Image: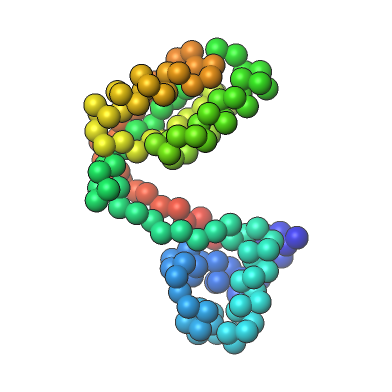
Length: 156
């Protein structure tokens, strides 16, 4: 498996371009990185096989889909045993409103990122789902007032 040290400049160019436009044609990508289409396809397949590229997806506009409210929630569990952590993690997988779930070090156990319609929708979700998740002792909620930057791009 390749490591970041084994990626050459062309691999990095391919990754950068795919982050900018995941729908770019192989022919156009070959043009941008100055390689033949066959060579670019081979490299792209290798980057996928080696796990550098984990997938492709469309980024949707939450405002157009009635999910404009972005909320972060700190979750403190009552215990941090393997069983409780595993149960909490699995339960989070079952709810599409939870976009991200991160086990963190520090003053709480998990950081969640949610998309909701509005505060009333969040309040209903919190009572029905969030506070019922396995092991939840305490939560702290942060409603985002302005989304200053939102990207999935990794600096290369």
